[in-house]
Image (cartoon, rainbow, N blue to C red; front, side, top):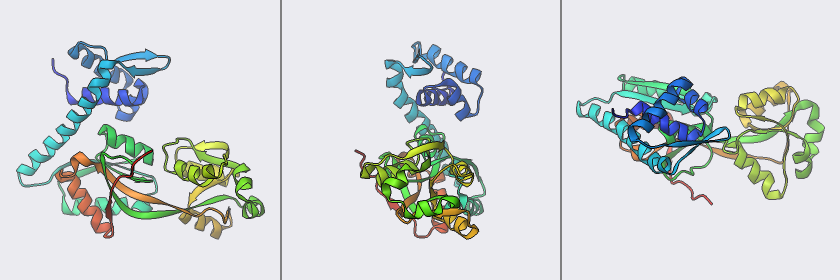
Length: 305
């Protein structure tokens, strides 16, 4: 019996999530199917890949050594299929793209539209993913391309800046007087709606703005989707870091108040794995993106500390 690519992808997802159910949800398969895939890989290899600790699954030493090999094989399989199609003189295939829910900012619909006009044999699946989810999906090979907010941090990725998105700190209009006169400490001490995941693009911005001043936010609620955060703000739960476009609408509607202290920007990026730089499918997507964003520029990943 041989290990197929579906089973190998499941092994990688379980290793990344350290949880069978979450991995199954990410791959859109049942938990029983995910369990069977992992069991088959272990049986074929004749080695135990995971050990259960409390509620998580941790890789054995053998599993750790095999994980990077598995990722490399999955990536090579994608390249193999893509170049096989190119041999026949046509770019065709399937792209899986992860993008945030703020589609107007990224103009992802327009990019896919241009791609389909130029390459009618390329189909696209577009999934809503927060920036942290897009990075993770690129690492595991579940996504071919990701659109995300933040800094270009991963050395294994190619990054392209397409825009800069401005952010402000906003809160309920009922708190307007307090928000507008608050100093840094008073602002941090007010109720906050904060990102649920430290890997979300909003988190490092708040850490830079407040953490570097020795301040900790008084978080009373958390969100993993900015739309949910705005819903809580509108209900009077607390302050949050918000895109300036939404702040402008709220000011016009008379529903928001804005702090004069915080003005910041985040880079809006397109990313793909560096190993797929010459993949015809990736090149077709990036060429289409450059038509929508003519000032798109390639970036070098920043060193992390």
